Image 1: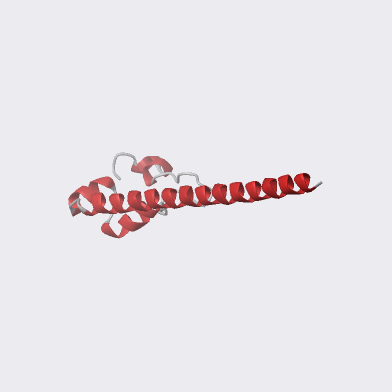
Image 2: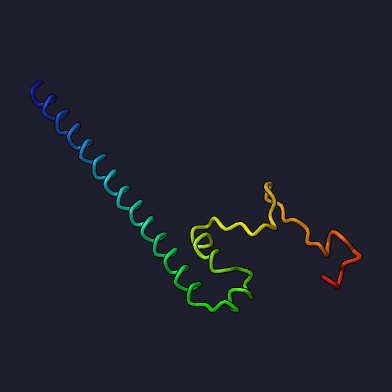
Length: 100
């Protein structure tokens, strides 16, 4: 009987230790993922900031958009609330085609 109790105690301790190790590994993975995302945001900000105003204008963005682009929250006004791209003035009005 005493042997069975010792084996249960060892089994319980092993399970607790195993769960603790798994939790620690998950924590390390989450931290690594967050650090990689932060590094990507920083790289994006640095690369876009190194462009001159003319190059940014060619891309259709301004300096004030750089942080929101890096964070993935950029909204360019062509997409409505339902996620559909709004038609351009040229597409809405055939009379303006080629002039706008």
